[in-house]
Image (tube, rainbow, N blue to C red):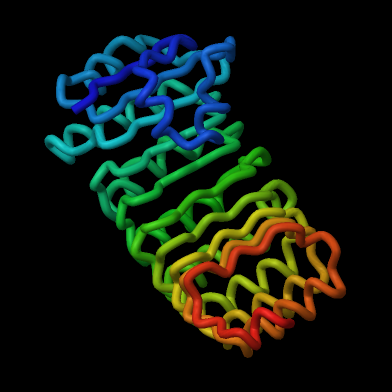
Amino acid sequence: GYHGMALNGRFLATEEEFQRVPHEVLELLHPEHKEGTFVLENDRTGTLDTLSHTLHAPRKDPVRLRVTAAVVRELRSDLGQLGMVVEKCPNLVSLYLERNEFRSEGVEALSPKLQTCTALGHLSLKRNYIGDKGAMLLAQLMSKWRNKSLKSLYLGYCNISAVGVKELCGVLSRLPLAMTLTRLDLTANFLKEEGAAALAKVLGANRRIKTLHLCGNAIEDGGCKAISEALKDTAVETVGLGQNQITDVGVRHLCEVLKTNPAVTSLSLKSNLVEAQGGMY
């Protein structure tokens, strides 16, 4: 596998690797950024350990950290090393921890370290299967956080159900997060109608969210209706509702929103149960 690492703004990767990294992440980790940048990809050579011991003192500059598929060898040891890196970067502005195979214990181990990262603008825990317990621990962190900078929260493929999303909704509606969060990604979890209804209330209270991804959550027509009602008076511009078992009934509710709220400019309904009639609304 590829062993990649970037230090102090120099992103080391092959052209093929650049093609596989999401565009928005590349923008945040672009070599032209003058702030410190640390990127670890599919680490099997102890790079995380090296990085944790190389950072002898807390860095004062803004730092972007991306660790993908690196916390996989000895979980307790790796989480400890990752925690040391986070602790030495109090001015973290982006933290992407995707496909690292940790569950709720990862959130539990990192939460105390993240408390001091009040400038963090982008947080991703995609594909870590943190579950409802992890969502609860994350909600507890955010309820105490003095972070007034968080703009993007990525929790796709995290095995979260309506139980966990309700815990998150309780804090996403309150200050300071309600004034800063603009992007929420909960793709491929298990929210169903109950979880969608909880999120609908967040959209009513949080008027800053512009991008909402809920693809693959089996919210069905009931959840689609709840989201549609909330979208009538929000700032949301992009909505992802693919693979949610939505039928023509749900599409009709969404079309009413499109008629009344011009803010919604992008709507994805791919791989649902929409028939010819739904396409005519």
